[in-house]
Structures are given as C-alpha cells and as structure tokens.
Length: 224
Image (tube, rainbow, N blue to C red; front, side, top):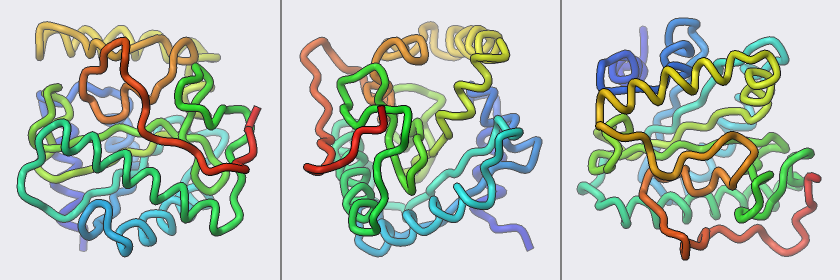
C-alpha cells in the first residue's frame, strides 16, 4: 500500500502552485523518496533522518539518475512563521551535522563546508546536497507545504545537468513559472556555483548583512 504522505506530497508537487520541474520529474520517474518523521529538531527525527539519507545515498543515487530527491516530512506543529522555520531548519541541519561527525563522516569532496563560500554544499554521509525548506507560511508560494519539510537534492545531479546543458533550460522554465505564479523570482536565486546556496535553503529573503547560522564543527575536513 502506498504511504499516504507519499501520495499527498506527490500530488502537491504535481499541482499548479509548485514550480520546480526537477521535482515534478522525480515524481514521474518514481525517484521521489519521502520520509515521514516526528517533530522537526527532535533527537528521534534527527537520528531517523540521518539514517534515511545514508540509505538514500547508497540505494537511490547513481551516476545516471539526475532527478532523485529525498523529502523529509515532519510532524505537524503549530504554524511556524518564516523566521521561526528558518531558525528551526538551521538547527535541524546543525544537529544532523553533529550526528554525521559522530559517525565519522568527513565533508563531501569537491564542496566547501563554509556556508559563505560559493562552493558550499551541505554534506551528509559524505555526499553534497542542496536543501530546500518548505512550510505552510513560506513567502514563496511554491514552498507552502502544509507540514514542515526539507528536500535533499544531490549536488552531483546539478553538476551533471549543468554539464549537459539541461540545467539552463530547466532554470529558465522554472523562473518563468515563478513569474507567472508570484510575479517575481526568488530574490535569493543565484547561478549555480556563483554564490553560496545557503541563502536559498529556507526560502526566506536575506539581505546583504545576512550571515548563515550554520557553523561546521572544528576539525571538519574541507572537501576542496
């Protein structure tokens, strides 16, 4: 029997208010991996999510698949404001990083652990990810999922899509959809590899003075 969270998530992604074509491709190709968890930021959710991501890197990611994504869907809580979600998301990622270090994983090769670097990617189980936060009160319409959720997308997939030229077509069409849906594109968007992706993670607008609240633990090996 199909998990109801999977069905609900897939239906939402395929709806008109969701603009990411790569996620829609994951639904069509059967490469969407949903993970149902407890409260965001809880110890149990952190442990379960790290295990799920480790298994995802071993079982679902391959050099020939460019549209696999894992989406962590957390237990419903009282509606979070955008600043509250932003803070909780970064705390969740910090806690995941702590588990990663405890289990002996180094930062993914080829990317930086410095969230201010244009080469930054979040590393789990030795793999680099781009993280997309979603919640009910997101300012970006495409991120308004009823439950707190985090999507983990492989940086390797982005690089392969960019090398093949597919990335630029996807980017143009996604931005066109955002313009139709919200009359603007996300002000945090930058070209892949030209500015830190950390600004885009939660979906909240960031100013010039913004500093990422995530700090890799001392001794985290650089992936460069």
